[in-house]
Image 1 (cartoon, protein in one colour):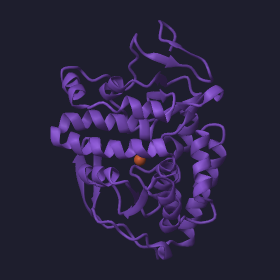
Image 2: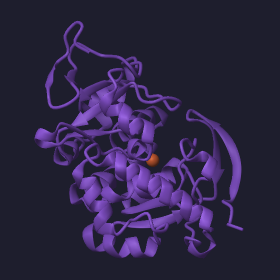
Image 3: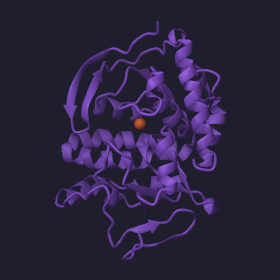
Image 4: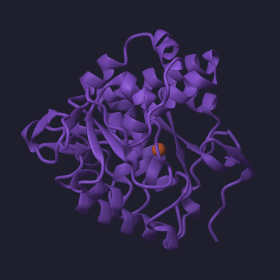
Length: 297
Ligand SMILES: [Fe+2]
């Protein structure tokens, strides 16, 4: 019988009714994974890899290969850490599940990425309301091999600690940045057009296709303040994806002190998740790009 996560309680938050776990760092209980657990990993891994070739950023796929992730078995954190530490100085730590925000930010600021050690059950292959090992490991960890993205994640952690000190509104605005980049970001990959780098997308088979191939969502050029003003959905596919040109662009755009930006945003209404503004740079599917006009989105 596999070990079970230690839930402490549930709490109502702005992200819904979420379980609260111990904040301890835990050893990955690798020997307790059952054949069924490894089978869930194998199914999700092979399904997503097939979908993601030509859809995810090449950088992401290469990083998974470089780390030695495969469908054969749930990876051991210690094996991944050897490669990751050598590449960028990041490491994974095992956790029971979602962490309180400040604890999470502090880990990132110290180049530690918390990974939920348990994996979803067979009947949850397509949807799980909270992050599990597949989302965290398959989705988040590979890009930590990229030096620029690795720096961005550390900077985000430091920004999180700061925002936490400023107040709840600043945290709401900063969380949107994480959501629309780390979780649901798209990147323009040279002449290949739009590709996925967000973990929330790469770990979802439906959204991996929807974000690129559906006409429904907006695909808008990265704009820091625009992102921080924009609400997001947790219960459906995203209404809007923001597209970066490169990880360097993301890093540079988020280098300035956010405190004055939080001040400006505090005086503005938030935008609905599906809003399109005249000033938005709208990306079309494929390689085209243009500015928003009536009837153009
Ligand atoms: Fe995530």
